[in-house]
Structures are given as C-alpha cells and as structure tokens.
Amino acid sequence: MATGAALMVVLSWAAGLAAAASVDTSPVPFQAGYMPLFGGDNLVRSPGGRSVRLKLDRRTGSGFVSKSAYHHGYFSASIKLPDDHTAGVVVAFYLSNADVFPRNHDEVDFELLGNRRGHEWRVQTNVYGNGSTSRGREERYLLPFDPTLRPHAYAVAWTPTAVVFYVDGTPIREVVRVPAMGGDFPSKPMSVYATIWDGSAWATEGGRYKVDYAHAPFAADFSQLVLGGCPAAAGGGARCAVAVMTAEFAVMTPAKRAAMRRFRRRHLLYTVCHDRYRYNGTVFPECDDADGSERDDFHRWGESKRVSPGRRGYKQQHQEEEPRADKAAAGRPSTWPTIGTLRAD
Image 1 (cartoon, rainbow, N blue to C red):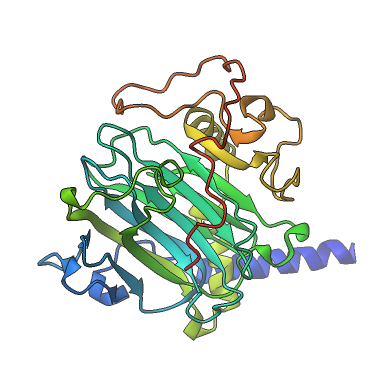
Image 2 (cartoon, rainbow, N blue to C red):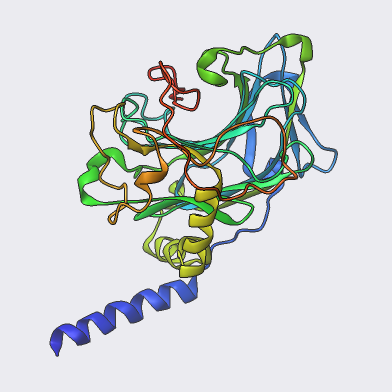
C-alpha cells in the first residue's frame, strides 16, 4: 500500500510538471535560433529570414549551427534537395557536441545522400554516443516521394530513453536506450547543425560516383526550423525533461508503430541490426526483432531482399512483394556503408 501511494505521488508530480511546461515546436526565424557555421556567401538567407539556402560549389560547402546546445528535445527542418546529377553530395541535419567533446562526442544524424542523374536520393540515419564512431549504427532508406520538388520535414525526437527519427511526421526509426548500450546512447547536450558538403569518398555507392562540379552549385533549401528542446545553459531541468518525455512526438503509440513498420517494410534498404558480417556477428543490444519476423527480409550483410534502389520512380507506390531469392554478389553491396569513411563531426 505504501509503495502504491509513493508511486501515485511520483506520477502526480510528473503530471504536474508536464502540465506546467510544454515543448514549443513552432518554427523559429533563422536569426533567432541559428548562426552561420561556414561557407561565407554560400549560405543565403531569405528576405524574411524564415528560410536558408545552403550551397556547395568547387570552393566550399556551407552550414549553420544552433546558437544554443540542448539536452533533449524535438528538432526539425523542412528540406528541399537539389535535383539533377547530385552524386557525392551530402546534405545533413544532425545533432552533435564534437566541438565540446572531440574525443567522446555524441551525435544523431540525418544524412541525405545524392545520386546520379535519374536515380533516387537516399536517407541515412545514425546514432553515436561517447565517441562510439567505430560502432556505427547506420540505416539507409529510399523515400516515397521526390525530395527535389518541394520541402519535406525531417525531425529528431531525442529523450533520455529513446531517439526517434521522423520523415513528414511518420516515424521511420526508433533507437530505444537499453542498459547494455552503456555510453553508446547520446546523453550529453548537443547543438543542432545543417550542412551541405562533398562526400565523394563514400556517399554514392561506396565512393564509386564522385561530385561532378560541372553541375554546381548544388543548393538545398531549409525552412520551418524547429528547436523544441531543453537549453543546456538553462540547466536542462526536470520540468523540461518531463515535458519532452510526455510530448506527443516522444510517445510511440500503437498507430505510430504500425506506420513505422509499414515505412520500414517498403523503404528500408540497409540496417546494421541485420548485418551479420560487419561486426563479426555482433548484434547491437537495442536491435529488437524478438520473434525474428523481420530477419528473413534481409541478407546477412544487412541489405533488404524486398527493397532495391532503382531509377527515379517516386510517383509509383512501392509495392510489397514477396522476398526475392538471395542473390549474394561478390564484394560489398552498394547500400552497405563504407566502414572507416563515415563522417564523424
């Protein structure tokens, strides 16, 4: 009885804190929340200051960074990607603290990977904690739309217990913190970054196709910038932490999980969770496929049997097909991240 009463007190306290504080997920003007990082005049602000264009040319890429570091929250940007031949181009929206912790930094990544003319952009997500860059947790996906026609929202919800990646409001990946992860889960305050840069060494088919500057400048437009987090300078605070953990973006409802499963079944190209070669059979502790239902959809190197990259066909719906026969090719599949060349900002 005493234990139950104590639990009720804790729940009432948490509910009171959540009611007293909420997370503001409304977009902010660039000047209010961000500042230029690099690139000089390759960073172009709109006249009203609500959007920013980042360009990559022979001279330099460009980028911006949040004025504050945050200890958990919801961070989003609507991004319109460059069209035509974009092989080797990387457009990134991510959280990192490498400037403060260069040897043991945390990072949560969206990396949008360009491609040859007529071929689809790919999206890569990744999570690092405490400098665990040698244990990359990459996943790669195709998109159900053409990301070069109009902006689409890419968002990260980061709480003390999980990281959830969203595309246009649909969760595409959830990394749940489990005790066995240890320091591999990001836990230190991070700033929010957006960049465009030359990833010729690895971004398109393991570096086979490089940036062709005859097609430059490459321009990515960022708008609807959301910084819904707990500023580290304010101490993070229990009230803000509870507000983040109880906010709609942090709560994975059955409907959200069903939407995530559908997205992953149709668009997931590669996952480290089913890669039995890269880390000599090691499976990361947060990988959840308890009943093995997902495993048969992937080759032993982590590449999907159901989803395959092809030429542009965004308007056609990706159909759920029966798994194809295992056609193991010699060498590393094109969707497998190139080990040792991934950026660790």
